Structure formats: structure tokens, C-alpha cells
Length: 245
Ligand SMILES: [Zn+2]
Ligand SMILES: [Zn+2]
Image (tube, rainbow, N blue to C red; front, side, top):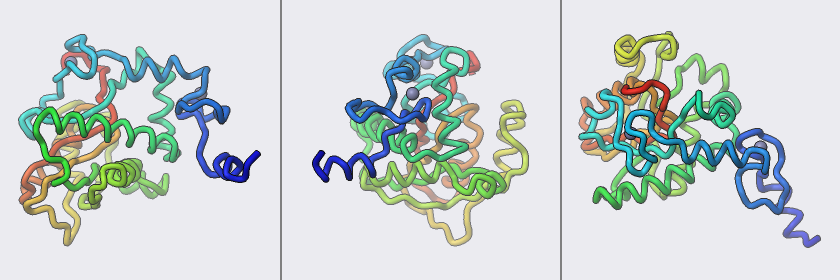
């Protein structure tokens, strides 16, 4: 075996992003053979509301629709019921912050973002990337913020500046609240960091997943209130769970 080959094996991560098991080196995919179906299902899940594939779906939670004339970018539908196994990748992102998962998600987002911007005549090179931050207590607990990791990886791929400008001092977990309580809670939780400058900026606001849209909405409001020129929500996935939301 050539030295180059040995080094490659040592330093390039080769774990399946669905189950976390090592992948044989000959496999060029992100997933092992056992997980191929789960991963394919995640990528091809259709929208619960309109029944379309991702490319033809324009459904968004109202809270997100109102941010910027329905401009929002996401890659796949997250469906707890249809695809329970692929949910593992979100678990690994949120709880373990796996580099391989971050990398694959960022790659997908970058591809979708570029084609979306091209189709909508948006000059993405004029944008900077920020993110919906994790609750402070959770960030402390896990010692990282998955959205920050994603934002940095995406910034590298797109060659765009990434910056942190929001705090999340929320105490309540959004999951346990209904849609209206979520927005109220989100508005209380997020705030602009001291000295953060967002005036006149075009901003991609990144999160791993859009659920009710309350967090995206609250953060976008802060950015606009502080002079941002435009804010476009970006996520890897959109929750498919609640029909008609
Ligand atoms: Zn696997
Ligand atoms: Zn749809």
C-alpha cells in the first residue's frame, strides 16, 4: 500500500452518517450498504402537504413565509414517521456533533443554495452566514453548537464570511410548546449580541431543521429590526410531521 493511501485512510473520516459504523474504504458514499435505503428515503421523502418532491414544493410554515416573501432554502423533508432510521443523523448532529454529518449536510445545503439562488436571481456572493444559536444551557451541556458547526462548514464551501451575532438565553424547550407559545418563547429567548453589526447586511440565517419556524422567525425579526438588508432562512431539513402547518 502506498503511503499516500495509508495517510488517506487515517485522516479521512469514513463513518456511515446514518449508523456511525465505519464504511469500507472502497465505498465512495456517505452511508454503509445497510443504511443506503434509509438515506435514499430521507433524500426522496415527499412533502406531506402538497405531495411533491422537494424541488416542486413551496410549502412553508406561515411564520417563515412572512419573513421574506416566502424565500427559504432547505434540502430534505424530515419525517419521523416515514423514516425513523434516518433520524439518527439528526441525533448524531445535535448530540455528538459528528464531523462527517456536518460535512455532508453542509455539502447538500451548499448545492441546493447555489441552484436556488441562481433560479431566483439572488447574488449569493453578497451574503454572509449566521445561524440560529442553540440554547446556552444546551451549548454548555454538549460543549458545541451544531448550527455554528454547520454555518462554518457552509461558509468554507461557499467561500462566504460566517459570523455569530445572536444569543439564545431561552429556558424552555421549544418542543414542548404549541406553535403560538413557541413564537412567544422564541421572541423572549433570542437577542442580538453586544457589538454585533448586521446593518445593511444580506444574511443567510442557518438552522439544521425548520419545525414550526418560530426560532427562524424570531431571529429574522431581530436581524431586520437591527437594519439587515435581507434575511433568507436556510436549513438542511424541513419538518414534514404536521400536515398543513
Ligand atoms: Zn450505516
Ligand atoms: Zn409542499
